[in-house]
Image 1: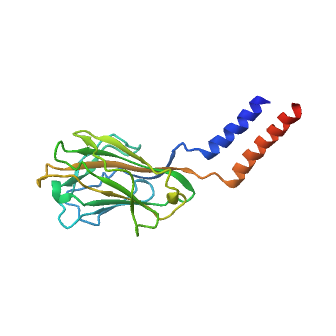
Image 2: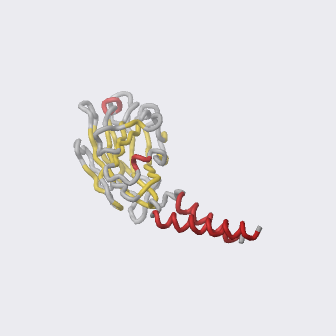
Image 3: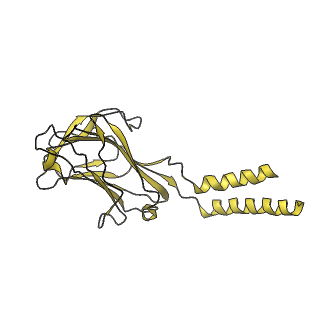
Amino acid sequence: MKASFLSALSLLTMLTTSSRGDLIGYWDVNTAVNNMSAGTVFTADQGAGTLTLTSNPNAGGFDAFGGTGVNLLAPSSNGQAIRVTGGENSNGAVMTIAVDTTNLQNIVLSFALDINSGSGHDDNQIAYSSNGGLDFTNFGSTFPGGTQVYTLETFDFTPITALNNNPNTQFRITIGGGSGSNNSRDSQWDNFQVNGTAIPEPTSLALAAIAIGSVLISLKRKS
């Protein structure tokens, strides 16, 4: 009887907790080239969604750079990354990711980031929107990224329930912290992923609850 109770409880736990295993969108950005203009759009290489580049009026620009295997998702290959150039002139440049999270929850954004030592973009900000970009809210503090090496950056939006089951979910990365003005004062961004988990169907939750209730009634009768 104890084993039956534990099995039912395990089923309910699996239905209500996150494994972060479902891909929503992935961008390997291997089609990046030098001198990309504001408004350049990358469509998802796996899953669905868009990644759009937007420069501020003084931005140095967006180029291509050698990519990384960090956060790479097969069958994509290690090709190009997005290089944000121009040091302080690129502060305020923006990358925006738009995805549809219908029937999904526990949303997680991740990507690989490498900054130039001492002068690259080391004060970047993540923000999210639940209304298609009409309004954005900063998420957490600014982040620096790796220094002269690609590192994995992960942002868990599980507490932001407004992003669950939402076809108008967006994430905005605002570049900051660059100093100087030459193109060696830069940052490299690669392998963007958005993941989530399926929202359990009400019938599945109800069946698990009934199973637990039945076991509890049985146990009470036995006592």
